[in-house]
Amino acid sequence: MRKVTRKQVLLQGSEACVKGALMAGCHFFAGYPITPASEIMEVMARELPKAGGVFIQMEDEIGSMGAVIGASLAGAKSMTATSGPGFSLMQENIGFAIMTEVPCVIVDVMRVGPSQGLPTQPSQGDVMQARWGTHGDHPTIALAPSSVHEFLELTVQAFNLSERYRTPVIVLVDEVVAHMREGVIVPAKGDIEVEERSQPTVPPEWYIPYGDPGTGVPPMPAFGEGYRYHVTGLCHDVQGYPTTRKDEAESLISRLFWKISKDLHRLQWLDSFYTEDALITVIAYGFVARAALPAVKEAREKGLKVGLVKLKVLWPFMSQTVTKVLEKSQKVLVPELNIGQISREVKRVNQGRCEVVTINKVDGTLITPREILKTLEEIHP
Amino acid sequence: MKNRRNFSQNDSKYEIRLAGSGGQGMILAGIILAEAAILDGRHAAQSQSYGPEARGGNSVSEVILSGREIDYPRALELDLLVALTQEACDRNLPDLKTEGLVVVDSDLVQRVLWGKVASLPFRQIAQGVGEGRAINMAALGAIVSFCPSVSRSSLANVMGKRLPSAKLAANLMAFDEALKLADNLRGSLKSVENKEESEI
Image (cartoon, rainbow over all chains, first blue to last red; front, side, top):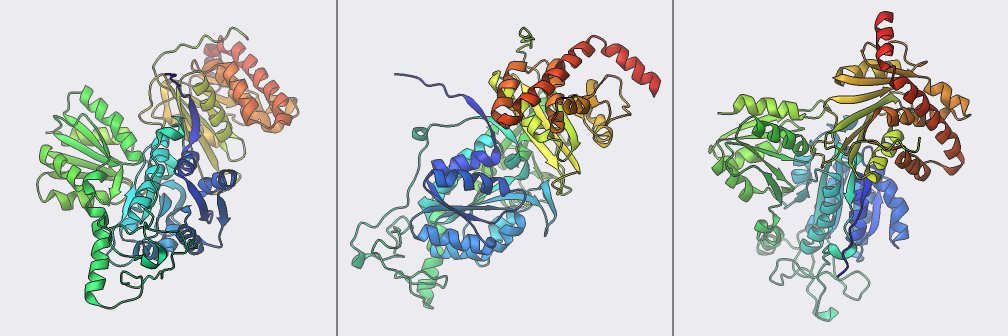
């Protein structure tokens, strides 16, 4: 067998995201430029038409999200990319996509907020916006890459999860990860598993658009293929028509949750380092996990029993993984570029098991390995 | 110049920061440097920070080179700082490691409060080849001379890919001119150091 060694290429995070999207079969992009997410749009505008896809610059982010939903209903894998202020504008339509079960991918390159904030500086302030930005009880899937390579990989996975569960998937990425360049070995097309939305196996007249086939995820034909059905953000019955019947409303909303929560064990994506005998475990995500790793390595060299768990899935919160960490460690340290958003979840899951220490920054600068090491030294038993 | 592939394939990290004002091409220089290092089989990470303005303001590009995978892709202690404005120089000096080297433009940066300094006329070199914007490529030429982790041939190769073909020749001239001057200076860095100190 011929073994091909693939060479490293220097890619910007944003370029890697576009490569991942195209590998996953993205066929439609609608967006509105915003720092620090504009590069994704720029590269998409160049590359997507070459791949036979459609690129539209819309009048704003509300329109972008609307166009993404429309294209997905018509059968195209669709995405958009934005930053905090634009992400806020998209929230209403993201809720619509959750309710109507339209697969799509939203990349949010986070910058310091609130409002216009610091457009060019890194933050992890949108973690809770990703979770609760749109109103009403709803499930959320959000992924957080920490390197250029992971940005590619998790963009592919974002499309896969969105097609598998028929729900919007958010990629929450730090400004630094989107803007930095690293050597990446781009996987070959055949090395990447790409999932497609399930299709009805019955003729159009038998099709029940919002029925549960057992997986919680109804098959989804493209508009124009002959399967006529009604799409509404109102609570709907299995035929897609508005309903106020309490049994129908209840079963719809619980199915929206159940189709994802039944697979929680499949969504525990993490990397762990030196966790076996760790007395203190650092729980980090995104770029901050990159600062935590050298800090943990140096602390180990100094004889401190510390480890690192890097979360790649932020929502649904990886409580199974985090519970295990909390059971084994005496203390956990959660460094974040916000006032404490994931640490809030860690504390919720913790239920008093161990001490939760945080490092928080909202001044537009990064948390450095030195700062993490210093805290580890201070809190080590 | 052909035999200057003497850079050691060591594992240690080498941290470079290119600082100037927006429009001087610091980010492009960083990208070219990182891509060349990858061609040379090393690991590289390039990152940047800048203000909201399109021109002017502070523009900083960082390149980390290493023989191993890079855990943290930002600079912690700089080995080499290239500063093309006085402000860029003043702001970034504190991040140099004790034995670190500062490379500055001799016209644009008048005052360097540091021991190991190489002051070279990048702007004049660029103007001399008839392409004022080649100041960033001139600075890259000097980096080849001082940084053990990157080769001239790979840099020239990447410049060929990344620069507009009509401007390539002028840029390469500026690059080689600065490289030559930096090579000459390298042996006498000690005396430069003394001179700068006495000036201060």
